[in-house]
Image 1: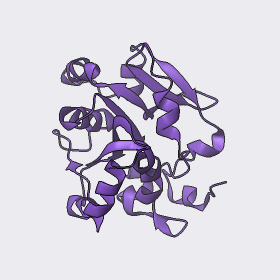
Image 2: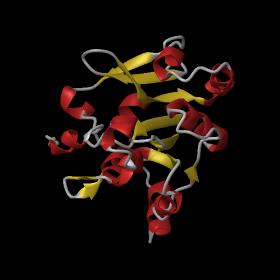
Image 3: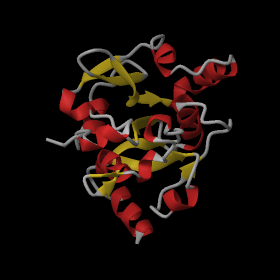
Amino acid sequence: MAENRGMAIANDHRTLPLTGLLLAGGAGRRMQQQDKGWVEYQGRPLLHHSLRPLERHAREILISANRNQERYSALGYPVLADAESGFPGPLHGLLAGLAVAQQDWLAFVPVDAPALPDDLLWQLWVRRKGVPLVLAEDEHAPIPVIGLMHRRLTRLLQYYLDSGERRAGAFFAKIPQHRLPLAPAATLNCNRPEDLQGTIA
């Protein structure tokens, strides 16, 4: 059934020529060490909420996960582990995604953001002209785990990680980019148990 669902998405005329990556490889330290993808929010695991915009518009979907990989695989999408152990951060997940993505553009979202707009990928896509990166932003700052990047950043990202750096914000700050403003309600982030009490408008 999961494989059939993936096939249906791939053949949907609404898809864009990009790969969608769900970032689910974190340690969940503020969520009592739980794998946040499987923590329930409004009666469903968080991952199902966060996958929604990817399933609507991505031609291909990948999942970055360092735990419960068989469980994630049952969803019907390729699952990628970070090359480095110890939950090294989202940039390692992005590098793994870029290495196998079949499309030149990689859209990425975190597993703990259940209120992202359904047309998020389309909004990112139309802002990509002339730059290799589009990042979402809230009223305070860019959000380095929600965006769209071109595969030509792969070598630069590899060099950055090889230097020992891991900070996503510092890496993206150096890249020419456009921004996608998101409403506060759309950027709901379920990092802690108390965040699970939030509601989607």
